[in-house]
Length: 413
Image (tube, rainbow, N blue to C red; front, side):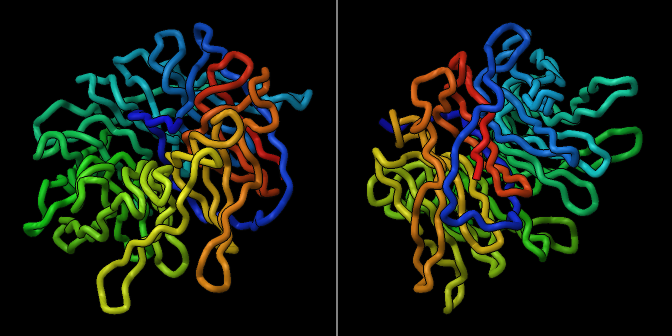
């Protein structure tokens, strides 16, 4: 049975500098969350690396207050991975983070929480290394309910070259529940100023428009932003949009594609761009077997944009791709599905482009198939993947592990 979550994790993904096509792999649990007081539970976000090879992430719940944590995993001298809780959310400073973290050039971490903050509607936060050890959290923005601002940011943040942050909130804005794209600009004294770049209207130029963006954003080389909405579009099943900056500082939205049950519906994962400017994403449902798709949006020869599905997932092989994608230098695509595979525990998939323009789909690992229903099981990944320099993949699973509270895992090539 396909699991349909309204809480998801999404992230911006970069093009990886290696090819993994066709290698044999095994999986390893690096850390099992305990769900005990002080530790996290149910990691919905993926992990990111620092320059020293440590991993950083969040859990949606758990911690001392039940509102989630920010954690670091580092290798100990005995070769085991050890967890350090960097921050324990307590609602007033944010609650229930579901998106990946991002580093700035100074080594500070930034992220979003879906709830909590001054108004209980979510936050943007910064974690900075403190003198003498530990980390200090600062809430950069608390989302209010109403007043033209968005609320409930499910998606991760991205930086531009000037150090401004960009993100989405799934609800709020001028149309209350349609969502927004926002920018946060750093100012004097450590203050950040929010600007709403886009309020998603129900109609755009007289036609149905997308609304409720759960995904993060991605820049192209020209500085345009691309993203998805989970609802809206011509059939109400989601959309792909572009935001283009103007010289006066305003941004113009364009609806590039409306998703359909044929090509996939209800996208939650962030888009990726290939070298030719084509956009790829995942849809959690729809497709030929109603188990989700990988879709492509590209410019059409006569102008405009064209949507097509690259691959339709089929249960019980795999189902419900909720996270985003990553593409290697050879053009292969990798991602996760929350369901399907052994015991419906989810999969990791690889897609390889064919010479005829089509795609071949295969698995370089099937999550849950090796250690299914044991203390080392990995179950139901909803995040995207990150790779090290050797081509090993790292991610999180919302379930499984020694305590059933989720894991951080590695797929070893």
